[in-house]
Amino acid sequence: MPRHPTIAALAVAAMAFGLQACTAISGGASVVSLIATKKTIMDHVVSFATDQDCSTIAFERDLPYCTDPNAPQPVEPVYHCYRSLGAITCYETEDPFANGHREVR
Image 1 (cartoon, one colour):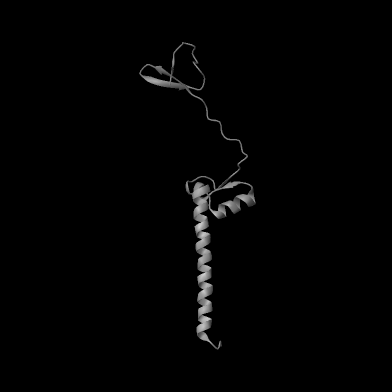
Image 2: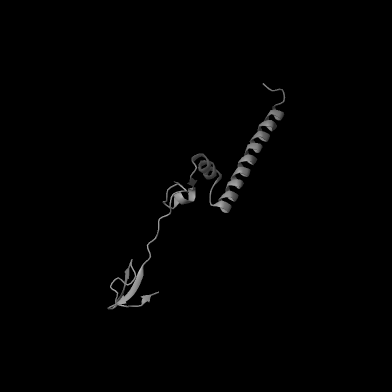
């Protein structure tokens, strides 16, 4: 049993306060990281370890947590739209019927 229980209690309180300060600092660093890079510190660690782009925000938006940054991006098709009887019709090719209609923008 310690001779000075007050000193032991102060030492325990100081250690607990020190741990709280570390938690607050790392929590603050995570918030700054999240605001600046849209990733938490753990996202950066996992991204580094897996060589992928990992994000908690993407996961919360029902997207994959990690994606390969070197994967080719999908190419969106280009549509050409023309007026037809009472509507606008779109095609993937330009003027598919060669009838000289002007494209709607």
